[in-house]
Image 1 (cartoon, rainbow, N blue to C red):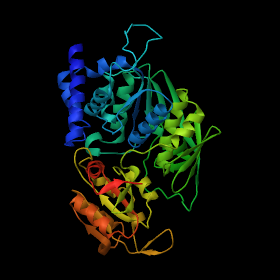
Image 2 (tube, rainbow, N blue to C red):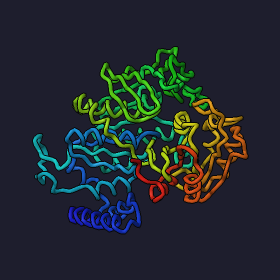
Image 3 (cartoon, rainbow, N blue to C red):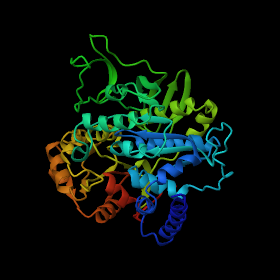
Image 4 (tube, helix red, strand yellow):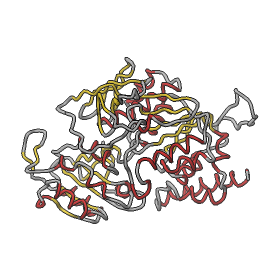
Length: 465
């Protein structure tokens, strides 16, 4: 079997090089499928090349959180493997490891069974894991740390309700009794995970809004009951079910080890974590939670505060996660949306002075069920008429595209947007081209996942200077 492992590694690198040269595919999963055909136990063999294994899961924020952790570790001088492009099902994880893993890196280990001073080619792996595939990955792959970001309703056709999503993750945790869990204390579902050898909690203490930003009323709620059966009450509620919750029976939010006071600006966030300040080049409270999780884990791993502070400043987001591009000379912000709570948090950050393109697909990776559009609060975009942050009256179009463009147009109509200001262009490339030509200001694009992948291949969207 070891021969098939080494052969699959060689083949993965050859195919990866060919795909880069020909640009036929992004190569995020196809190589993984081939590798698993040749070597079904690939992950079991890969274990011994990595000293500490980190996984990140949850409904929202996996890609940004794992990207931040990877960046902070790498810039602090550590060798890592990660699936930075966000392909997080079993084929994508194998794909990323097979393309990157070099058994000869540093010094090929002798692999004694018990040796504290064994030299590993890689100090860390940071693997973003789809909630439903975590237990499948843990069948073969060892685990030291699991970061869980949040649990919101997402892709009901794949996951069902939240109890199902939670069960997927809990099943994975149950397979790894020596796992250290890093959990979001503010999410009652996440905080209630059981198992592992230890739990470490992180949470937000308070939020301050600057630059004219203000908290929005959360009309999309997730209702949770205490284990005793009664509804939870909240001393503070930040968004969705996240906040400081309690029940009269005595059940309450666990005390976080890492506590953050968050200050939000239009272009960044400041996090004061246990008296230490960190500037994060990301917008929105949802990204502040991602940063808090990442910084907390790095502190647990012994990364110095000054290194974290310095290296946060050079972090570049993954494509479509608050990334800025250039379209026809205009600043273009791309923000992935895929479920109601995540969309709500993104919508809070939308610049109403920008020209807006919303792209909704219903492919398998997006979720076939687009009923979530009716739970997201698109009313924040509604007229009559829109008012910009400068106080001006807006009469701009909102362009909708993708395979479910008409559904999105209907949703905007019922959200109160003037139908004369809704333009449907189902073809994504034509929609992007139209917005690039017609926009009189900055552009905001809100795509679902497969639409995001298509945008990533478009030559019209250029790297921002």
